[in-house]
Length: 590
Image (tube, rainbow, N blue to C red; front, side, top):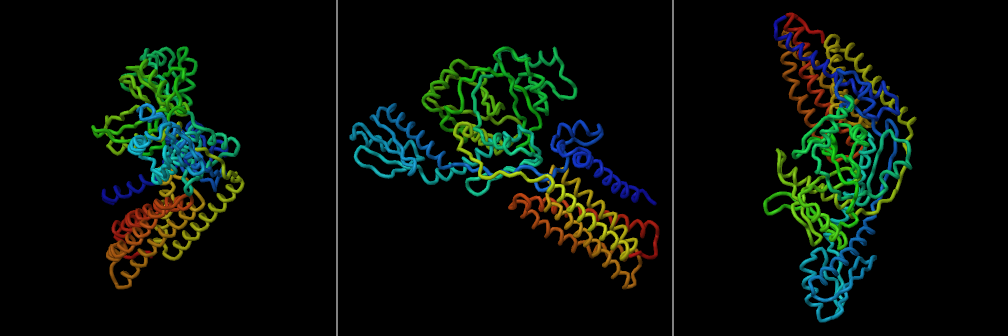
């Protein structure tokens, strides 16, 4: 055997061993841990051997396989629009009076979403109408009768507000559930005003309802920069335990504690903060999966909360004249006064924007900000693109509006998916997959003899590669996913059947074993490739347009097709060619 064969077989062995190694977290999660611990990544990390891959690379079970809680939350956009119209009426009245255009009072008709402005002096209404319509472009003129002006929200703005209200609610719910530590939570928009939530492995509907149903708390709190070395001193004087993975990081010149485990970080810093201060955390976002946090870092903030999101009247992302993303925020009259005092006393300091005890950002206060309006510049430091910075600005605007203007959210449906049903589905689905695999293996071995056994080896490797691929992407396995798994095994067998039949045809024409194998694979290649690519296109369409079980099926199908291409075209050809070319065989057992 020459070195080329050693290299080829070494590649196949390395792929197989690497696949088995990568499946260790999945094995421990689904087999070693019991149901109560299955979704707890901290427990999994402790149980995994030191040589195993990180615990995050594991295959999760969907709601239909392990049970959990299914919820549908309805976002009351009508009430939110009514409250918004009332607030805008107060803003318009304050604006007109401050501009000294005249005295007006603002009343609203909640059912019709109408804003009625009444001028004390009807003669001033012409100037008021011109200024209001030019400044508050989100309202249009409904009618005018003397000193009374009737406005209504612009239809395009109303539709945008409804969409944003649902997005805001989804953002708040996602952040709250992430803090709860639920693995593979599924939060998605349902229709125009509803949100569907799946919580695998959870069994307390009332706790889930309380978690996602309460209003998010947005706070503006001053960062304590008077002692920038506080965390460095804390780290030196009382070193954290090694298992907490707490390290000392630098952020804009300020030493901060950092750890991938938020609870461990907060537990370590508890009772170590100076009097009148709190330790909060900020998520360091995963550059690949935006909803994931690769680490958390600490912030020392004043315990006093001078301003909350209740005083915020609006927030929008835009692009400045310097072509930099920014977020423009506006406060109501009372909030404007408090914000002006806060920024006047805090010039040169950082102000933390906190949602549910998590620091979202901490911009510097460069000067006193009056008028109830402020601008948070995002900058464009680092290697991230403009689109990424603009996306962060839009997310911050949603965060601010989510805390300031949350639409009421009610529970439309909540039910618990039984764990016993999940066990039954796992057993039946797994049994179906194993029986199907066993029948295929026996058929291939009997009908195609040695070539069938080679195809069986590739088929087993194909199954392992599918599981490893799903674990790598931290995918969720559902019952339709198991169906996709079985389907891809069938496609993989079909490819091997096609190759073996092509080899048989070449042998029947009187060609030698070498020529039959080479031409059999060459003739079958484009047929196999075309069939796989065509099915891949359908899989990607299902993945990007489908939801829930359909997307789970598509994920398994895509990973399985890629694995099938590798095993049928590369693995079987290397093994078959070795037995024919490497050993100078005069015949092919097919």
